Image (cartoon, rainbow, N blue to C red; front, side, top):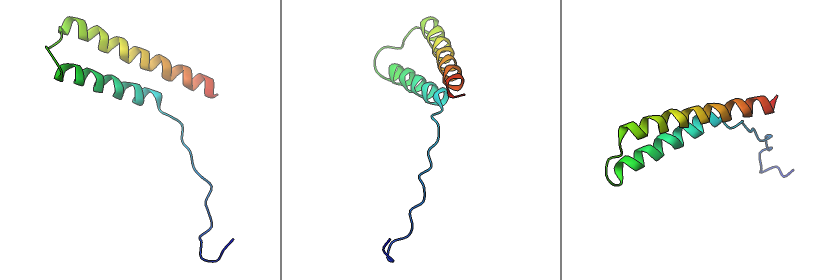
Length: 68
């Protein structure tokens, strides 16, 4: 090791929070949908939102089970 360099620390990694990632993508997607074009029917968008949140929860549960 050269004296002018500081010693390297081991790199820390963290696990992906799939629930937060997928929920954020869902809300961004719905927001973009509302901003670009005619306003979608709320009767259609409410089940899409609930279904998307359910899917995100399902993926998060699977990821947690696989990690253990």
